[in-house]
Each structure stands twice: as structure tokens, then as C-alpha cells.
Length: 294
Image (cartoon, rainbow, N blue to C red; front, top):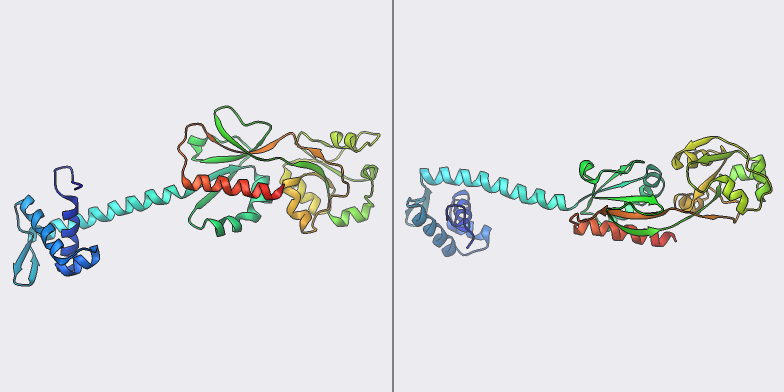
């Protein structure tokens, strides 16, 4: 039998608190799923251990003694805090915090959030969108979705997928400029970012004879793609981030030439950190979503 620090039977304390609160052994037994005689025996054992009466018995009528009332009140408070702590521990196991790039969070993950919630309604998923490499311990992050050639040392890493890069723009912009062949891009506004696969590499792959024209540099992929959606020019779109917009007809890819991205997507966690069923569920769900995108 589980006991308290001083050898008091924890089960008997629980049964006594229920009997005092319910006003009788029968009602307490119904609440706890034991017989009336089982409740009576547990209470008697507790009285013998404490050396004091907890109930005054007059026939079938029970009255809690003053000492019993004090004990029952303190136990009620103790059990309430104990069960609250247990519930909080269970909730914390269901909280998963994932870090990812703002562009990935906005353009790829957010449209899929409903799918995740439908599959895992009990997981409290929290996304931190950041361009810096997070400090897992200091920032309370469980895992990260990183875009890099290789994961950093000291991390457990699972490769989720790769992507290609190709020009994209709005259908209206493509029609207005008559974008039919790669050389037509010399008449276009090219939107520049900070990914390794730049316009010079794409122009070379497409067989264009001259260097690409200059254009505005926006840096963040989310801003670049928003400019393309707003008919401001042509962007080099990463396939994962533009797939939904192309499928919906908001963007088009006028040319078949694409570059293989030098970076890949990785699910990473610190080496040796304890995992949970919720974290593993998130990893498997992300792997499934990346598999569908390929």
C-alpha cells in the first residue's frame, strides 16, 4: 500500500476525505468505486493509526468529529493541489513548441494548421517564427524546422525534404509582359532575395546569353513572394513555399527550368533531450506533409 511520509496510508486518507465530504460511507463508496464496507474498514484503519475518532457513530448515522473536520478540510486542499499538479504535468506533455523561418510559418505551415489540429486535437502546438538559430533551452523550444545544407553539430536531425527553385509571378504580370521564353525576363522586374540559388545561376541554367538585370532586393522570402503576388515582378520561388499559390492560380511558373536547392528541410532537436509522444507525433506529421509535397 502507498503511504505518506510518516507511514499514514494514503488510500485511507483519500477514503476518509470522501466520506467526510459526501456525508456517509455509502455515498463515498459510490464515488470511489468501492463497497460501503470497504470505506468503513479504511476509515477504521485510519482511526486506529491516528489514535483518534474521526466519526461519531450513532446507529446508521455518522457525524464528523471536530478533529475529523479539520483533517478533512486540510486533506481536501491537499488533494486538490495534488490533482492540479498531475493535470498540469499531463498538459505540459502535450505542449510542443517548434521554431521555423517566418516565410515557412506563413506560406507553408499556416495553411496546414487546420489539418494538424484535426489530426491531433489534444496537442497544444506553438510556433515561433524566427530567422535566428534558437537556443533550445533558453527559449523553451522543443524542436526546430531548419532550412540548411546540413544540420549543426550537437543536434538530432531528420531530413524532411528538399525543393527546387524557379521563377514565379502573378498570371497578370506574365500576360502583361508576354513571358514566354527566358530571354523575356530582360524586360521584367526581377525580385532578389538571399537564397544561394540566385538569378545569375538560373539565367545560366536557362541558357541566357547575358547577366540578369538588377532589381530590388527584399531579403525575406515572404516579402518577395508577396511582391510577386501583387504583380510587382518575378521572384525565384522555392517550390515548397509557392506550391499552394501555384495550385490556386495566384502564381504561375512561366518556364520549366528549375534549380535544385542546395538547402534541405530538417527536423532538429538537441542531442540527449527527452522526447515525448506529442513531439514524435509532430515530427511524423511534418514528415508526412513533406512527403505529400514531393
